[in-house]
Image (cartoon, rainbow, N blue to C red; front, top):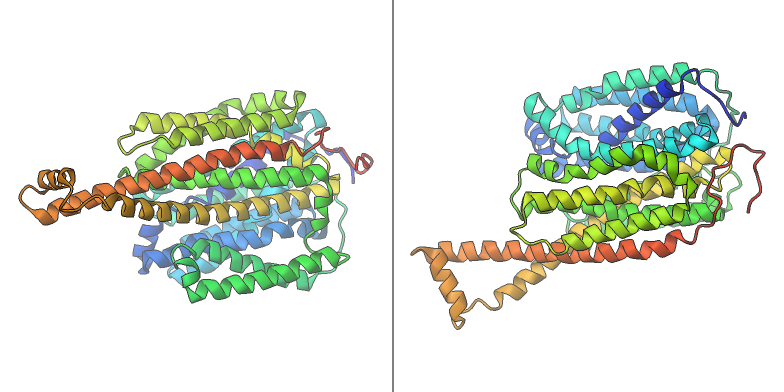
Length: 509
């Protein structure tokens, strides 16, 4: 396997790879805003429509760790091109779906082919860029990872309002076809060493059952009231058993479908741990802030999108500088700086109150963008730094899979904590409202305008709002401390952090 392959046109190759990844990452969030419309058009309840998100997430979570196996079998270029073309096809089928069942089937298939796209893009960019420019390639990919989820809801809302929901899927078709043609053409001459690894069926089946069930539990837990629901209990038990078998089998099998031995690399372990935990905390903020803006402050989904969008500004502006100059300094310092900035923005939000204005919300998002700009590229470079060239696709797939799973865990835990804290605060605040409290009675009189029921309802509404606000502040305070604790994790990695050029550059353990 040649360590350095140069495509005829590096810029065009990069555009093709980035477009495909942008489209794939965009699709994880673009449908979120359109769910009520989709539910209405297909005649299902809002609860059922959330399976549009779940089915995609479950399939993607299952196919991500299989990236290493699939690249050995088919080669990176061929796998990327086919996944991108199939992504376009399944997107088209999602758009023409006439029933919820059909939409969910193609959404699941879309998730399955989407899984390997991001890790392979990472591996192909590292393989086609010279050593000194790899930081640039990773920084560019990081920018796509940050901007696409922000653009998703805004674009999704605009397309759904201006045209109709199927267009959120149709726009993928020309992009996907263009990206796959460009990449196939540019990387045609890339020589790849193919293997025919035997298929590890036990690993595959336990992975599908274990991860699939776990993802369903995480996505549906809050709606089903967690372990008070028989469905959640059974699914959790199935997941736990399947994952236990999977882990034991993969660690002892001589040709496992998911290579868990990658964790023998120190930087891969430390980098992946930092990536997963930081991404989980970052994902929690990205989920909570729009929810809080809509539920507690009464924003529309479009305005919530505008208030959170400044997050993408600094990463876009800094990509070039981070890519060009980051590798000249200790990447652990950059990652640590990113955690400090992220923690700072969490502590700022922990001081928010219900009258906070749009400007303050947007400015904190803008500052958080600085943390994001300094986070992805150093962390990715650290975790890939001690892998062999032939391990990069597998390592990237495994790290991305764990990152995605971390995000799902965080989404479930933070929304649960927020609601629980809000209920507790509501109870504590209402304790003081009784006939013997003159202040409470005066407030009720003021709000009721001669209608006691209306007064009580208004007061209850205010208390609920304050309860949710206090809960939000507490969760963000906790997330701030989580970011600060990650500084310790990233310092477990050891330099040098330059990715290896080829099989010749072995050793280093």
